[in-house]
Image (cartoon, rainbow, N blue to C red; front, side, top):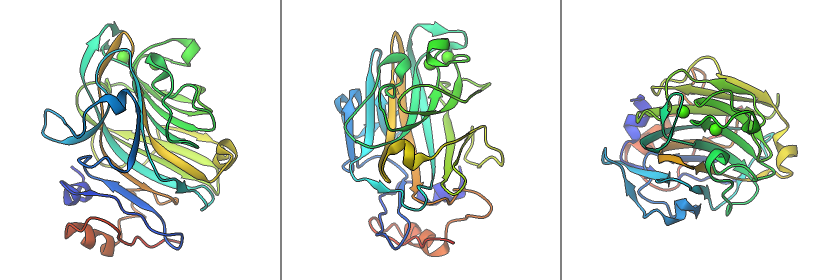
Length: 284
Ligand SMILES: [Ca+2]
Ligand SMILES: [Ca+2]
């Protein structure tokens, strides 16, 4: 486990600061989902959900033929050139239903930045994302739907815009629905318009992005007030799609990078177990 995450284990904290500082959001577990708007199948799943490892997780879907999502109720201002950095861990387990080439289970998870909080998109291959316009959707896709969904295979990631799967994508060798924890980092630098996705099977941030895309996110969204969260979908195949932990900052401050270790003051606050408002000073 990453040292920072270990320090935070068991502490569910939501850290929000005003405009003078970057907003930092940190969930080390999801025992308290009061800050989320849950939609579709996610809303129908009892809270809190404790997984078979004893952890309180954000379970988006838990069966077949579902579409669900969870977005923070409050908007995040992306006024810092619309930049953000986020890191989260997810787990896809208990595969159900039919199989594609790499085995049973579907359809995956999407990290979404959008303009409303109360929507969930298409079921099945839509991964709860299709149809959510004015959006960025970073997909973790575990089912091969074919070219109509821009799927190169049944286990890939991609960076999408506008509520449709329009790539680019990168294939992932190991099944993401293998029941293990996976770790993802998404960074958007509004100064260069580059979106990067990193993926790993442990909590160490990879030096290289797995897939990247250039986009003017503020133009895509049509606003700098954005809702952030996750969607999932299942079809004839399904499974448990869980978010295990989540960090987000509304500035380009890559999490876990050599040039962006958490500031001592913030770590000290979290280490003392203080839940609520803490300060993370804006860099640069
Ligand atoms: Ca798919
Ligand atoms: Ca698959």
